[in-house]
Length: 273
Image: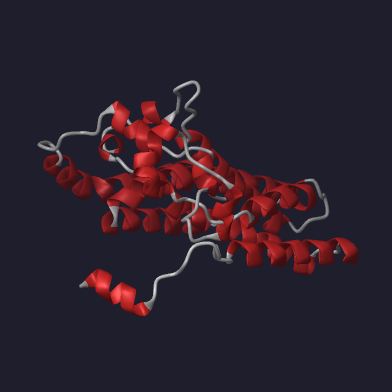
């Protein structure tokens, strides 16, 4: 999408989003946070790239509008069934939603068998009873790559346009999804507390599951950066240092906590029985 001016790629993304809604409406709602911003940034970069090359931005506002209207029509049957079925369901209250919203610590909170858990990252006391719902850590590596990528891709003018645009689109979409759902205990505030009033979103309880969509965005961010490291003319020492840091972080994030014994096969069988 970021390399082409063809409307077909916008249509493909739209149809993929609709398909996600039909197979899992829960994940589909979360995809709106990330997908909408990704499409916005993609169109923005696509337009800039095309205009910089002296070409015409072919997808008109009319064609893009028709695509979105067509998408809305396709999901009407699903939402008609959905709203008919939730009419008798008790919606989650504000306090319940608050406990399920991600904290900053949630993005680094791991199972106690993980070595990262030994760093002492803990959750606020008021969500400890739901701590298993805040296991959102996917390691430190993606966040390190976002930081390094900002220095070497966003600020580097000779970076490949497609790689740079993909990195910025996925990173920006991830950051927006975090900001829109993050809860700050000290000021009792999260934008999601207001977003949850939107029909459909008002039924969602476990907001931390948005990490399923965010993980995909961070995977694209990581992939674009690794591609850049292979192709862009970085200093060899800098490239080697980055590769070593990535390797070390990957090893650390996959270590288990040696202070906690692992279950034996027989123990697992006994627990199932």
